[in-house]
Every structure is written in C-alpha cells, then in structure tokens.
Length: 387
Image (cartoon, one colour):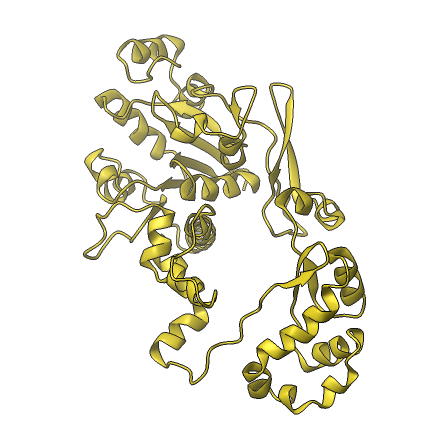
C-alpha cells in the first residue's frame, strides 16, 4: 500500500485504530489534528511524557496541524483530500458536512476518493445524531445484558474498560477500505463507507440474535472457570473426543459411558456436575500443571493470566505479535495486527510523530507550497502554532 495516501480525521480509538492498520500495511497516513491535538495524546499510561496509549494507535503516521475553524484550514484540508486516496473520519454525523469536508463535497473534486465514516449508530436513522462511545454501544446493543446473563445470578451489568465496539468498528472499517480499493482498481471510482459501532457489536452476537428470535428450551452451555490450586483455569472440552480424553486425564474414565454426559443435551443438562468433576481434579494442581497436562493430551485448556504474562508468552514472541517502538530513546511494545501475509509486509511502524511535526513537509510535498506560503498560512492561524 506504499502508493496509497490516507487523510486521517480521527480521534480517540475506532478511527485511529483503523488508520493505524493502514499505516502498518505501508500506506502514507497523514493525521490531521487540531492545534490542541488528539485528546488521547495526554492520556496515561505515560512514559517520560509520551502517551504510550496514544502511540499504540497512531504510530507510523505523519501529523499535520490544521485549524479547521478557519477558512484557510478548511481550504487546505480540501486541497489535501483532492490528492488523497482515502479519507477516514469518526466525528458525529454532520460535523464533516458543516466543515465542508463531507464525502459529496470532496468526491466532486476527487471522484476516486474512498471516504470512510465511523460513528456510534451510523449515518442514517433516528439515533444517527446521538453521541456514543464504546461503553454506550455495549449497553445499547444488548451485548452487556447478554454477557451478564451468562454470569448466572449477577443482577448488575459488569463494569466496562475494554472497548470492544471501537476495535470491532476499526477492523470492519479497515476491511471495507480494502474492498473499496479493490473495487476502485476495477471501476476507477471511489465510494462512501458508513461504519456503525452498533452494527459492529450486533454482528458479533451471532448466537444471541438467533436466541432472541427463537428462545431455546434450555439455557446455553456456558464455559466457566474452574479452580486450580493457585488460581483458575479454563477447560473447553468441546468435541466428544476432547471430552473422552478429559475423562481419562482426570481419572474418571467411566465418564465416557456415563449417561449424564452421553449426548450434547444430557451434558448441558448436567453441566454443573461435569464442572465439579473437572474442578475436583484441577484444584489439586497448579494452573500451569493443569494447562500443560491437558494441552499435551489435546484438551484445550489455559490458566488465567495477566496481560503482562500473555505478552511474555513464547508463542507471542514466535509470531512477532508485538512490535517495539522507540520514541525519544524510550522503548515499549505495541500489538501488531493479528494476521500475517506471505507477500505483504505488515507491522507497526516504529516512529511516532509529534503534534504537527510534519505540517510543513506534507503541505510542500502534497500541495507544492513554498516556505513563504506556509509561513503566511501560519500567521493567518490556519496551522495553529506548530507548523
């Protein structure tokens, strides 16, 4: 994607994660920031004043400051879009139109432009204008209620700190941009992409959507943690073969002929009894021993680990799942994309642009502006104070 230029009008998470994946694939991603910058630039975790949280979503991009409150700033944004391949934005519907930076306006000048909008509820419908961040979408989509029902007995929905809707929306937007680029290669024309975080989460609720329409006669089997001597483990003996091997490993070979576990229906009906059998074995062993013993036998199992422990897993190292960033001499890790391609290099780029670091460079490279013109624009306030 080295010949693809992406104009990034995004903040916080869903948009930046989409455009970071494009940067990982080699696209030239130009992040347009206000004079104050993306709000996440100041959010912890911090390393010597650098937000590693921000860096994980914005590494590999160039930063240009434009004050879109000024006529000159908006004019420059339109000029850059006329030379871009892709625009991505994640403001509330209507904001880009008020700025004169909506798809219709920009596509009139650049018919090959691919323009992706990521929003909470999408661009149309009665809730299109509603403000929404990921936790709101988790609640509105039914995800939190469905998740809570699997907890068996907890009346209060779980607290929320992992923004699934944003990451899902980013991944869907990334895929849609690839499809649009493919279509453009055939037709020569760009198109508009409308990504809804609400739709992204609904699309994840595959079983739950069907159960909402056709309520099952019995509750769904729920995979539950079982206690080990030093914590918890997850054992997922899904297939009949897995279950038979599991019975042998836990010293209950008669389980293979136990009528309580003979069919899917009887196993689900007697699920608590099965979990007790498993836990009687696991609670006498460490989580690491449970994991090693069962995995060696072919039964899917993992102890519950912290994120730090997962990052140190030899499998993560072997796959190159993490990339090291070097920002001002400080080193830290960010996650790479979860897929590898045999013919396309794909990895987080190790650079992180300071706010407005590339403003002059990009304006001269893409628009051919002279030093004098850039200085004039700065004096007019179009570039904030960071050209």
